Image (tube, rainbow over all chains, first blue to last red; front, side, top):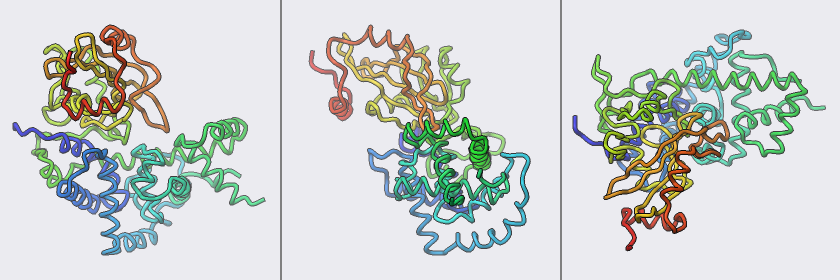
Length: 169
Length: 259
């Protein structure tokens, strides 16, 4: 194959895994995340990228905006979240001895119950290594809000997954 | 005393501490408290374990094949069965600003081989040392040399983070750029000069990458000696370029200044 990808396409290819994980943090299932990923790439190719835009943050923003449209349109996430919330207590109760052994499904279940895009904040910072400023920009919220949502997300993750005892006091 | 509020504050503090987002004085106070308060330390470890679990879980997604429709839109052939044409880096390889180039690839580069990237036949850094260190036009490093602006880190197509450190004119009137690429705790530094319309690598070396907020940055505190020496040997009488001069050269396609 002799097709040469232009730089932007190459860059897009390079960030697909990051974009897909972020889509998963929003969508909650891999099938929905892959649909969202496809819509995001379509949108970026269709509308183009400003020359001075960094590819990944730009695409994350597009992805998040598309997801918000989707949620407003279908309220998919709320329904999915409610369904999962009803089952997650029983499936993850009890303290775990082995940390770091949560399955993707368990993490998704917990994240799906987190309000206010806390799951997306956690994914951006803990998985993608974004600074608070970068995460704030992607999500269109102040950095201080990133900080407080992240703390709540981390706390909720520990409580809901049964990974640890109550906070120090 | 309101325990809930105190706990909430501690979780927020610890959370920002983990991410390196506290002002230095506050971070120092947390460090001191951690040394004296075993329960606080235990909480920090639990929060970190939670992060690690989330990372592990998310990175498992990387093992799932990318949707073929997405790859096709980007002009990349989806993997045929038994022929993994587009292989993405193993789980955990890609991070926002911290994306390891395969260590083997870095070693190969220093050993002087043309290294191949995970993306088909594109060389990862595209430096062919057998061709006198020419930087291939299709390589991510070429894009960084062509239109990177000093001090602005960017994610390269290879997934590593690259940054231009310095731009200067050498004694022959050719433009040269010092760049750094980080993919983990070690950053690859190099100097390349534009000779007859192509970027030629003059020197390469490794130094510890910078580190901030839990991520690796290409420009750390150290520059490898070989690279420093190369810059000293190359640089002409003029001062290194400022950003507006760099931008002018980028827009003009690196035209040589009249001698």
